[in-house]
Image 1 (spheres, rainbow, N blue to C red):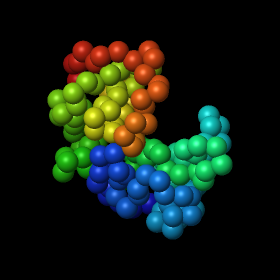
Image 2: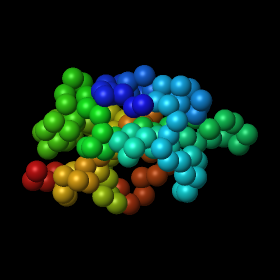
Image 3: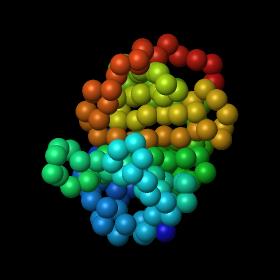
Image 4: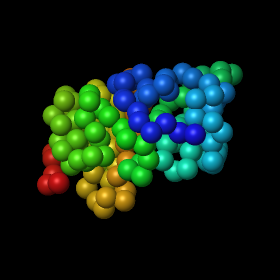
Length: 154
């Protein structure tokens, strides 16, 4: 039972989902996931491929808590600062890049740390377009191989 619309709250969450929630809280909002996986560390949950979450431990012995919320273009409507993300994806990417002090790219990801957003499919087919929301500091230790984003033609 995913929601039909989510508003991104930079570094905090999206819609009613907030970083730091445990699985039971997320499922109370979205219902049981259609898929779950522990591949790649942590726990990934997905609702019909339209909304996904990642839960990880912040330190040894702690509970798994929400640290990423992902949306595909086939899912609900997603808004960032009132702008329909997938309604005009190229325009959204341009606006978001202009608002981030240092966009980075690498490994097929456009990383906007100031905004708490990562974008995939920004330079490929529409089918690959997706956005992930993350809390402040999430990418700070994983920047090797990322380079300043120079822009592109959308």
